[in-house]
Image 1 (tube, helix red, strand yellow):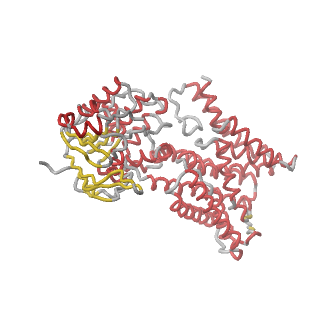
Image 2: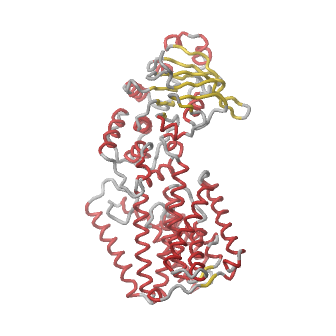
Image 3: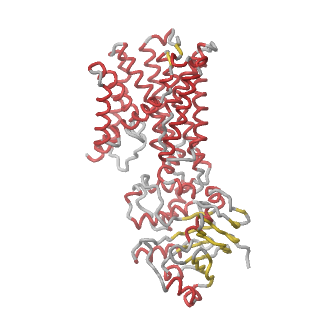
Length: 322
Length: 252
């Protein structure tokens, strides 16, 4: 494994190519580290947001790209962590790191419950069931106003001290998102990760060879929910505010779109997908009110010409070129 | 007579009004090689599904090596030592041959739950993988994606996967389906070369192929057992000729 490419193990990788991949990875890392010295704080905030959503998109990719189960509830799992962190600090008076841990734990627990309900189905039924489960969370956040603040949401004051500095916060999020990336990459390439790809290809064959398919999907779902929770907990600090839109369906769709645009089953594509979507949102909306139309056209073009996503397509071209 | 390793008592599988398998009783001794023959729709594959747990029987008892398994899930039956191949090729097409073997080898091992370990085969696993692939005569091309293999090679891999976990009972569902005559005789050779202590149940349409490989034959017709006899008696049996040879159809 020499490049940032996690899953496609090429069979006859030439030395030159892997060297190039190393150089490429190092260059990207260098750019990511150099960003705080170049960008203004507003743009640095966008970069931070991209990294946070890349973690969410990767958590979706673990399920959609590897286990072959496309979820539409990860926004709700993400937002659960966000709510818990802000509520924990505001109401329980917890120190921020403790509140964040509780937020991640709560998101993981929600994911485990969702997983119990959703593991037995696949395909479009899985999509619809997870969508409905996500809507339940959204409904709770919207209606339980004594706790969640209803439509007004909850305002926090979490970015105090060193975190108030955009560069410091960016650096922290960069470290966490890289750790999450390497952890998930290790996970999908582990023997357990291989069982997920086996399940994606043939559940009946897996069962006939002794695999408890339901248990494997349950574990994958819960672990993926943990990472969505990590993203949600950081988002609480980043945004200092949470409202039902953080757990809404649009958030789940956003995470899935980022994974698809970047390249499903690639993990690293989630960074690219998050960057493309967030940058388009931010910059196109500065020029036209019809930015959503532009976004829609971009999705259509990607689905027509690179259905395997930006990273997936680049890899195909790269391997064809030799 | 030794105690049967697989014992079916009055097993039925019912879909609505249709009894695909109708009161089938069957005893298979350890180390025996048994063929199940019969025309299309006789219930052969459904019987396999009942034995492997894909479709639990709606009535009757299945006992494997003293374990009652009628209500057991497929993966727990696999853990007892039951393996199968599929009539319609059922592999992991987007993975390499090597990765397919890894999955086959680790189905019954704790290592399948390792979330941070590396995926490569350890020396023991590698020996087993190599041996299974050699038995299936597919020893090279370990790094090729399965979807890039020829159909014949995929059928061979189908066999290699089912052998990898060293089962005690192997169910072969038309292992030669769709193969050319030359490939069929190779599959026959592969089956002949399997370890003699492995109990084998073979579904096959090709009578000549099946009868040359087994000790005993069960002929099914419309969900029921029609005749059980040795291969030579099956050839001469008029009931079998009537339902099977007389109206033989090609598998479509």
